[in-house]
Length: 333
Ligand code: BTN
Image (cartoon, rainbow, N blue to C red; front, side, top):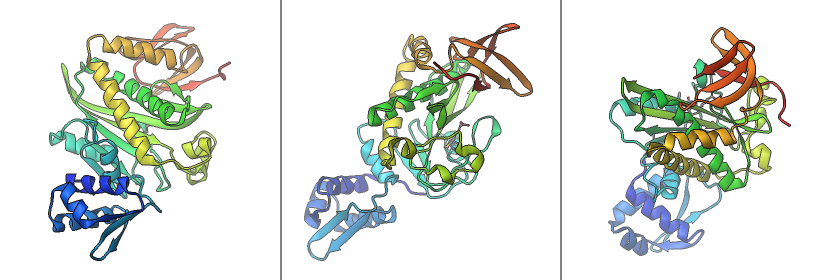
């Protein structure tokens, strides 16, 4: 596990200002306000995160931008330096599930805004107990801890807020108009680009914590996914035709979620959120099949309840679902 620290961020920030140029040891010491040894330790630690930093004896150091570690915790910490969330960034090369780590930390009183990332998950979890295939091939596996001031009956709104946030981030970074599929998928041309899983611990009248997990196919080559998923999945790489800096994507998502949650917690924020999600949701107005456990219903998705539940008009009348699997039955015109 890697955690970043202020000296590392200060040193990295100076390197990023002077990309591929020599930065003198004296400048690093003066600007970071620490000893030579602290600078050396920070540089060693940045190297461990994958940054290539060359030393020129008696002169200083140069950060080489070849093979930039785009998910390195210090990079993300640096990108989020003016954001209240994203500190610390916990990062693993390989991990069972980022959800489990963060839930454990939440139980040990970790503050809202801590995030956890992995290059690969060996037991990635999806909704309804399913597996989330998480190969070490450029995906984003991110969990974010929040302590939302929401009544437990409105916790589903967190999922909707996260969906809007991911969609905002992809629009702001890449001009990508993605589609939101209730309750928590982000699609591109009807194929799944991102899945979201929020897990919360509550008592009768308050939510203790929530951990929102985001699995986004970023630089994932589609052929690294199991054959049965290849036809129904998309990735940023497949859409844009080039790889993206995943740190930029993670930072944009974390910022957007922090902003969306702050807005949700304001008086009337829940109504506004449901209104905006409904406006952008691709499931509404469509013919859908909704599955909950053994039960399966078909009908027309008509609206969301104030709690974010889906209402469908079926042959048997109006049905409301708080959690379910949804299939869009016909393409949208
Ligand atoms: C879904 O079923 O669509 C939700 C998928 C959520 C996957 C993410 S990846 C990061 C976090 N860690 C996990 O084990 N799951 C979530």
